[in-house]
Image (cartoon, rainbow, N blue to C red; front, side, top):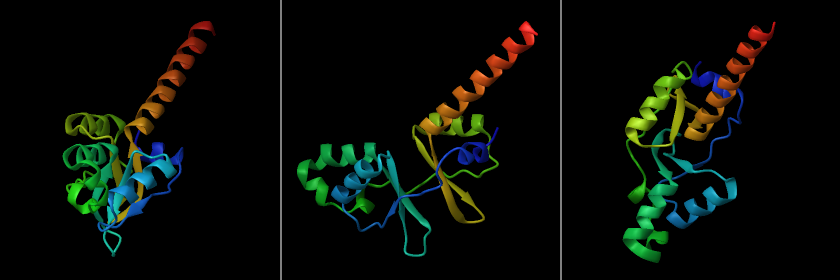
Length: 142
């Protein structure tokens, strides 16, 4: 199974901010959209970075309330790992685990087309395992 299978079962809506938005604005976006990370994009739409809940917590722990006024470009992760629709679920699970991150943008032909989270991956794998279990039960009882 591949990233394309995950994307079929979820919204392709992508939330982005510019590097000059503040940490406070980013936190509001995460809360309002009920998401764990937001992509930071340049004016041309290319990925400049990603800002996660963890990044916000680190910014506030280091800078207290003053951190809310910092620009996201100061605290975002600039080296963003991306995936393609053809990447396999086990390969992205391994990359997320090794890299200790929970969100990966999906890019095809240089264009941002989605984002997958560790929650999406786990949900997909659980559904896949449940289907396999049911198929085995059906086979045994048939």
